[in-house]
Amino acid sequence: MTEMIQRSLENGVLTLTMNRPDKKNALTEAMYAALADGLEEAERDPQIRVTLILANGDAFTAGNDMGDFAARGSADPKPQSNETHPTTRFLQNLATIRKPLVAGVNGLAVGVGVTMLLHCDLAFAGKSATFAMPFVNLGLVPEAGSTFLLPRLIGQQKSAQLLLLGKKIDADKAEALGLVAEVVSDDKLRETATAAAHELAAKAPNAVLATKALLRDGDRDTVMSQMKEEGEIFAAQLRSAEVKEAISAFFEKRKPDFSKVS
Ligand code: COA
Image (cartoon, rainbow, N blue to C red):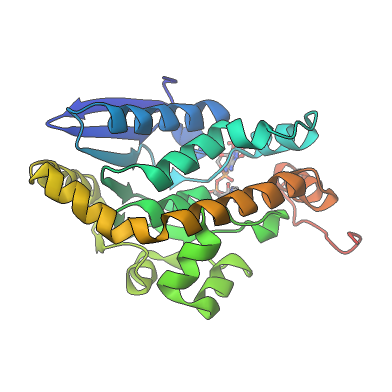
């Protein structure tokens, strides 16, 4: 496991901590692979009852690493590569894991930093957390089944503000919309999320698994098929002129200019 994802196991709680604070925990392929491995370990190991996702530093995650986006966009096209990519594996594991997921969102959550929360059974946010899904701003489409899960959670209009306009919201708004269960002070975030994970891990395990299944399984097939469709469009868009312009603009610290894209 890369040192940029830290792993610890205590009293049935597997904690996966994103640890690339100098880059706002932007997720590289190696980090996605380590997170995917962690979720697979959690599913397999009877000692693990709950997985807790946390982050070090002042951000939860700035989303996918932009350099990796650029590299994927210019790599040789391979028809199956999207299916086996570590990001796809992580997203599929998130959507299919039978055991509960808990997250503690400190600071900013961008892109997959928000869409992963739609798969978490309990998400907590620090007061200063912010949430944004600027996929369209980057010439991309949302992922992780969010184009199905988000409108069902918050409605079409609010989803359009977040997914089409890419609006950023604060922690209180995220709680009001139902994206997180509870907002706590920044200094209480880690202990609150950790306590909830341990509380869940101490409960009757089969009742917990069955309750999660009853809450989630009805939508599983729709989530998986929407995720597949999102993934195909996402992979095609990664090679587009608009994504190239958006990524160049990010690294050149300027606004993208989409006026010449047809
Ligand atoms: N991929 C790669 N590096 C990233 C990154 C990302 N997604 N997000 C931030 N970083 C890097 C920055 O390049 C910078 O590196 P540097 O110190 O070597 O220049 C470092 O992390 C700190 O980021 P910075 O932009 O200086 O911090 P900020 O507080 O001013 O802004 C963000 C933070 C997250 C708002 C801004 O970095 C951003 O917009 N990042 C891209 C987010 C994004 O669009 N992700 C994809 C979603 S689909």
